[in-house]
Each structure stands twice: as C-alpha cells, then as structure tokens.
Image (cartoon, rainbow, N blue to C red; front, side, top):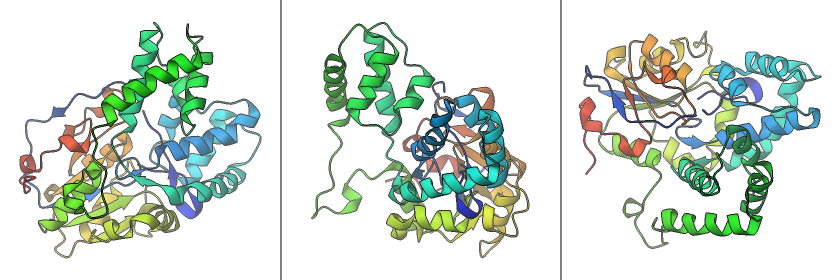
Length: 335
C-alpha cells in the first residue's frame, strides 16, 4: 500500500467490513511473485494514521476513513494536497510534507512485520463493546490507534458512554486477550526460527525463496522511506530479487492504480516473465487495480473496512496471508 514519506512516498489507509475468503474460478499457474510492502509485509498502517491525526488534532479535524480511502495509492505530493484540502488545514501541501516527514522519521524505524494480531485486537474490543450493547465505530477506532491499553479503554468507555467503569472494561478486555492470544508460542533463544510461529507474511516470503520462486518488492514508497522501514528486517528483505520503489524510480511514470510499477518489477526479473506469469500480493484497492491492469493475478488481503465493491477485481480475497494456498497457483505447497 502506498504511503506518505520524505522524498517520494505516499500515503494510504486502512479500511471496514469483514472479509470472507473469495476466489476467482479461472486461476492460472504462475512462476513469479511481486509483493506490496506497507500494510501487507510491514505493519505501518497505525503509524501513518497516528502521524496524520496528530497533524490534524490542533485544528480540530479528524482523519476519517473516507479521507484515508480517497488517498490510497497516491504518490507523496498528490496525497499531501488531497489531505490538506479534505481537512481544510491552514498549511500548504509542501508544509504538510515537511511536518509529516519529520514525524514519520521518528516512528517508522520501529515498523514491525505484519503479525496478524491487529484484527484480533479489534475484534476483542468490538466484542467487549457489544457486551455493553454498544457498537465499536470507526471514529473511535481512529482515536485509539497507537495508544496504551489504559488510554484505549478510557477513550472507548467515555466516547461511547458505556455502562461500566474503565477498570471493568479493561478487565474484560485482558481476559479475552489472554484467551485469544495466549496460545501463541514465543521464540526462545535456542529454538530454530522455523519452529516458531513467524508472522505470516514472513513465512510466505521465506517459503517462496526456499523453493527458488523469484520474488520482488513493488512499493509506492521512495528509496529513503524503504531504507528506514526495513532497517530492522534487513535479512528478510534481502531475500527479494529486487525492489522497485515507485516514488523514486524513474521508470515508474505513474503511481498505482496505473500498472507501471508492476510491469517494471516484472521486467527486472532476470528472465523477464510475461505479466500473466506473475502473482501480485496487495492490500489496497488501487494496488489491486494496478496489478489487474498489468495483466497479473492479484491476491488481496484487505483491511476489514474495504468495501465488497473494492474487492471484486482481485483474483483471491483473504482475511490473512495465513489462508493463502500456494498450490492453487502452481506454487510449492507449505509443508
């Protein structure tokens, strides 16, 4: 997914309804795989939202899902202009880029691999809200992103005027959290990594590399942004045959939803496969459109807020990369 970042990244968003696994009937075998990065391999979504909302807060503005959705896939400058206009901020797009870049630089080096836990936390919070006969609306979810458990619960209880104390809600939340997350094994110092439950994105990347399936990265972020974000994951990202950073790559003339970035990524494999031999992994609707426009099949792992209409062009729609079955595309199956 595209994001906003220093000299040439972009800004994206997350989305809202529950995803059901869906698959097209005319799946073709592939030989090469191309991955988006933000929101798919790296868990950067909440960091971007936190930065954008922190800029909007002093002006009493809310970075809503509708605004986030409208800038998904845009390059840095168009994204900044769209945000400034949508939020009616008293600054120029250039000033927004400067402020947001400073904030992002402070946060992004801590970007973690996608752990597949965000949806679990959201579901737990939603379940507890439901136990008090209340929904868990998107506006409230936006406010709690990146906060501590205590702050999250305080916001929810007060915003939704729940019939409980903050301590009561926190107790229920922690009880459910232990039930749903307590079974995940920790990686011990003497335990081989292959025996641990690695993040699902990492598991897939390593699996494809171990079976000599050529893989590439195709992100709308610029080279400087990518360097910061993968700093703590150098060994994993070294497994990619090459990386195409759309906002700083001269060959990528148009950003997603144009197909340029995926066509460039395919061309740079040593054997230059045809587009229909490539499988794209994406989380954003604009990325899906770009992959399909390039003549490639696309596996989409969308945020729950992405509408059904925005998912319909993907070849496969999954709740998590854990559900991906490589053999359906003629790739080696997981052992």
